[in-house]
Image 1: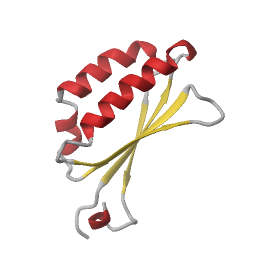
Image 2: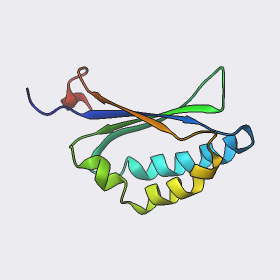
Image 3: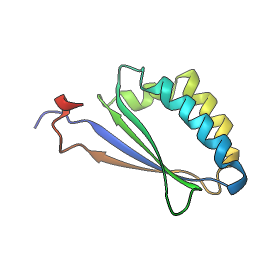
Length: 105
């Protein structure tokens, strides 16, 4: 089977007083992240029932793309900015894309 996209869901719980600042910092990171050649998608989702909870959905084209992403200035700025805003450490879950076909990304 050919290499499939790596899809990472990053679950983030933010302190209530930091929700707006977290969202702004995360949107800035996402806007730059989608410009990276190794990233097919970078979605920012906020929970409707609990606005302090977010899921970042990151789709990487190659196995090396996540490490390259974590070396970018925009990621490092985001990480350093939002870490103190979190109610608990973020939790990444890694998935293999099965549908739609990777070419559709």
